[in-house]
Length: 118
Length: 106
Image (cartoon, rainbow over all chains, first blue to last red; front, side):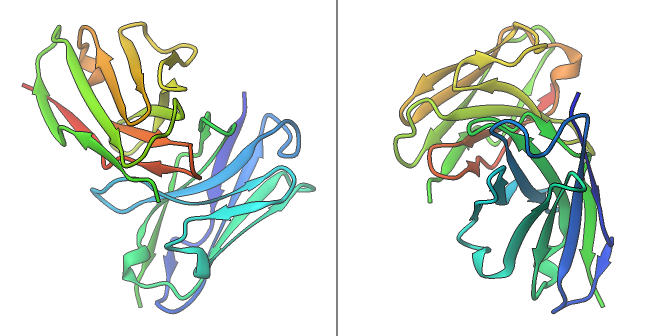
């Protein structure tokens, strides 16, 4: 059973870079045709897709965030990561990592709250 | 970007009721749609994929239908554990989520 776990700072200062890592267990991040994604959810609001990385390393990003987002993968550690630059209070949210095929998100992490505040 | 509009935004119903939630896409997405259930403080859980395929382990009271721009999620007989927020998600062009439908106990 594949499991995902987010990790990273819970508090980030405005204008700095938010960095999160998702560790995949119970399976290899580089096996199969999986997309590994980041999604966020501000308190009391809906889900917003941030971007994804394929097992080949190719990436796709939400156009509204593209200029600030980088998603990368470290196959040696079975992890993938998110960097979001120039954060503001509007980036405060629960951040989820997820994995799945081209038309499903089968696996989700439990989510991690990131607050942007000085 | 493809937009998904769910209706209603919230819904009150009783145990045993039949409930239908609608998701409309701003352009055709074939059957590239999934439905998720989210409970407070938890990650979303996949219910339906490819518009009408039931994810393994999900009760058969959940069903999905539709193609193109109009989709529905139906719960045939509400159970206490079904009160949650439901989201649709399209996969035709990258991915986007609907705004959610909150299902509350009447």
